[in-house]
Length: 27
Image (cartoon, rainbow, N blue to C red):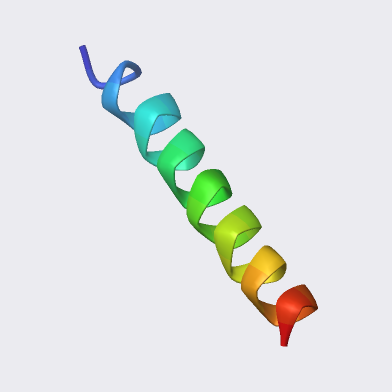
């Protein structure tokens, strides 16, 4: 049960970091 939320959070963080990286690239 505890293992399920962890990957979801990691995926969300990865997506957020990717978006940030894209934004930085645009700038």
